[in-house]
Length: 530
Image (cartoon, rainbow, N blue to C red; front, side, top):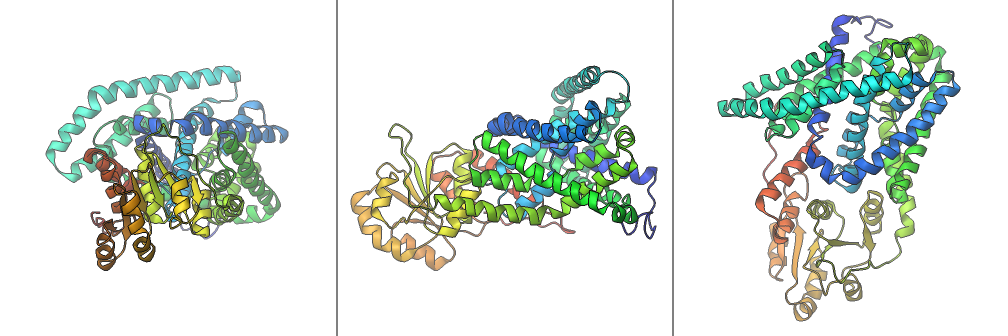
């Protein structure tokens, strides 16, 4: 706002800045496409098939009806309403990563919801661009669908017969700068191709990402393209601020405040309803609703389209753009409020309880303590569909883990009665996310006498702790890897019999999830190997 033409005027808003801003959205959609692989669909099938559609339908219906009440016709109300239902991928993923919950159940479902929203946003953009003020709504929808289907079919053909062989040829060159050039060429060329065919640039970029997602070169292409995408997406947000007029915002302050309240509060309530309807607990639904309550990059792009801006009018469009932009800045505080509320809701589950153990199911692994190491172990077991029972004795950690979507039982593992109730007689191993040497020493004679084949794996921080626990016959893992607990989770997976190739793929996914939202440093350094 300060450097834009409506204030100091250090930088103009012209065709060049508009193109650079549009390229920021193009690279964002390319990265989204990279995350939309067949593996993602398999692992997040429930969220993509139930939570995502429910959230878009409920939020879209609520905001579309609101837009109709303000006088918009059905096509424009549909675009504005569905656009308001989409959340900001860049902001949400950054918030999840900062709080260390990118790979917990809440983080995984939030990511799946964002993927579904982004895919829906692609079609919404195609539909919005096809609205020229004439023709029936059904024809515009059919035209948008036909264009998207043709582009997707072309992407499948290109991916199978051209992209994989070309990337394999580049890989043999073994030069990083070649992949950098190839990544840029792929994104820009596909975006330009769909643009030349009358489709949106963003649709081409998304399809380019989908093409690469199914190849073994997905990670290296994403790594090479990310710095350009981060820079250009940042420029997109800068141009949004440059387009705001502080005098107009001051004059429209009451309407902007009303729009922000309606957007964030309404979206929180509607998303909460959708999460409950898809089977979420109240604490988890609360966190999910609060973290995804803001406007989105898609919303800002939609409001910038000439047809949408003219239909809304400059004054109303300015109010909505300002409200969406401010909602992005309010997301961290709103998310923190949601997490506090979720923990209060989770207190109802803090009474001691025992899970039911199916005698016909595979023997479970018992996980004690939802520390970062314990959470990482639970994430790893979930990823490979290995049954486990999780127990937490610390009230604060129990509430936090329950609110984050983990299925926890409250109780102390030093209580022999609790261990019997949770199924220690059938357990494959005890996985301890926190070292409590005195208690381990106290119950070791009982464990050795009663369950001589039961293995115990414990996360420790020092060599002294490792030696002390190993003297008790336990497997002790020093948690030095990044993100915290990843080396402990690897040890648990190896004990559970997961193949090394599967563990390597999971490690790549974890490091990618935890680094996705962090800004790239000026001089990149590799994380230490776990």
